[in-house]
Length: 186
Length: 186
DNA sequence: ATGTGCATGTAACTGGTTACATGATTCG
DNA sequence: CGAATCATGTAACCAGTTACATGCACAT
Image (cartoon, rainbow over all chains, first blue to last red; front, side, top):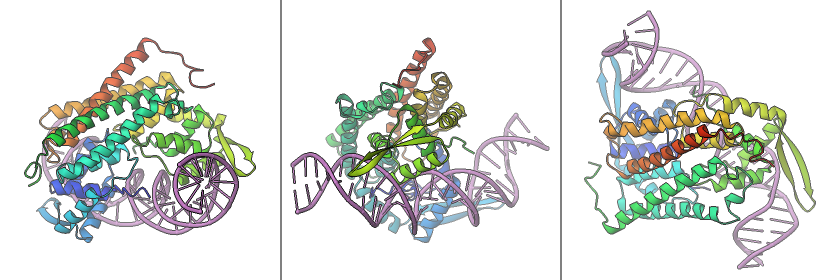
């Protein structure tokens, strides 16, 4: 019932929306984010790409490299754009994890900047709520686990940093709606 | 070959090491961390608990609640402690995600503070490397995806916050080794 | 020569989710 | 009176991993 199916499928489709890529490129990019979110394996990436192709959400251009295996550059189709637009516009689902949020941010960032604001706002509320719970005697702090330990402190630090970023980003976006179009895409 | 099998299994065992709990308690705690990492579902938690019990890594105390379903409080056994100690002491695996790191931190935090330092150090190097790559023209910044976009900025902010925390924590730990023992327990 | 990076793919497996079933209690 | 919280559990299903297979180019 979480309903925010942030499968690799949507995420990869989102990357392809920003820039045509090969499976290997996708892997390389995701690997660079490895410290934040786990990169899906090659196996998963390639089969996801095959699935997207079968469903007509991406097209492929095979660039033969006569000795090497040919590069297969995948590109999003109109049908794919429709699916993606619907997904990004759709409900975020409460209690999204950092991983989920980042994925949506990457996809939505250069696609529909106006739809972005409610997502940032939702996220801000969530992180803010977490921070508030720490001050209350009935929040997570009262939890027996790791009372006063490092993990709590770690989470706190990250939450504060994220919250500050969110507030900053929201302010920037609401002041000047920045009608991006040629920004990142074509 | 990632070898850092941070399955829910290890994580739950780690929570049980800090405090005996029911499956429902585990869920409640994990849910409070939902903004950071996805909480496993009830189905997974309960069946993991059953598995741990079968393997003798936890024991259970059934507290009958005559009208309500009985509470089943799980407690780690000596065998369980051995398994956990081995896991925490084991290799972290390079390129761990935030999720993985947090899990290890929660488990290790109140268990083996001396083994903690190399883990923090490894993590520090990883995050630091990411940050360095952003300055180089050949790093992730050169990636076609989301150039100059929000997601990159978001990641940067979090990375900086995490790095600062790690450096702080390392300094504190190396100056006074803090021989925790009763720290988190009774 | 040995390893690392480029480049793709498949099949078996397992970890975890979703959806279901049950039932009392408290809150609005 | 209906919804949420407490409290446990099972089984079908799906997402994603691991391990394998192939092969050239380039650096050490």
